[in-house]
Amino acid sequence: MSKFRANSLYKLNIIFFGCGLLMTGSEVWKQWYLTFVLNGGRYQWWFFPFQLCSVPMYILLILPWIRNFRARNAFLTFLMCYGLLGGLAVFSDTSGLKYPVLSLTLHSYLWHIVLIIVGTLAGAVCIRENRDHILSPRLFIDGTLLYFLCCLIASFINRLFGTLGTINMFYINPYYKMQQIGFASLVQYCGNDLAIFIYILATVFGASILFSIWSLISHFSCSS
Image (cartoon, rainbow, N blue to C red; front, side, top):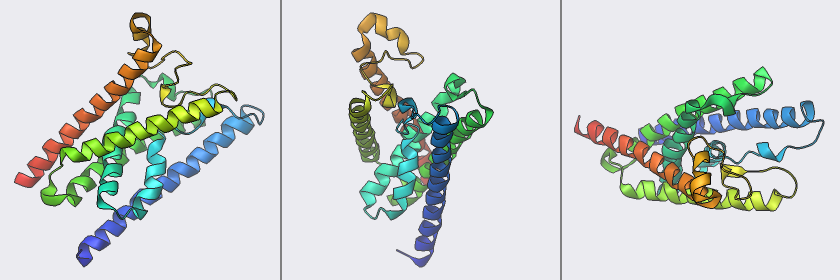
């Protein structure tokens, strides 16, 4: 690796890690405010930080330390497809961004804007770091496997802490009716479990569209 490329990679890692620290600090504040200011010291499991839009926070904290090229690409692909999708999709229905307190509402809006910025940066970095600046379908497969792993972790959290309060990580808890806009209406036709499965597949489909756009960008950047 050339000195210039190593220096560039170092700076990018600093940016990613800085965003991760910023998001972590703001999430700690949010959890404190929700628990001690609004709920008298009782933790609300509904706000446990492991939704699709929360995962990038964890990835950004560990990404700079990943030395395995394939693993790094999987994390970058998750950010530029699934993280970016989470940041964009929420603006189709902003009701989930609104809280009874202005500061929490602002935090929610800014959080998803950061997801869009980080996802865009991750896409540019992924194109730059791959051979000939071409994105292989293997990248999306690895990013999607990471998404499925997160779904499994979310299901485990739902089951582990389900007796302590209302919890619905990734909105795939079968004990709660699907609430996501566009999918809630499916429950009456196909049942809740199938609606959840369709929601997961739709998320993968949405991410695949974003990956296709990134692939087109990579081809244009290579040919220019």
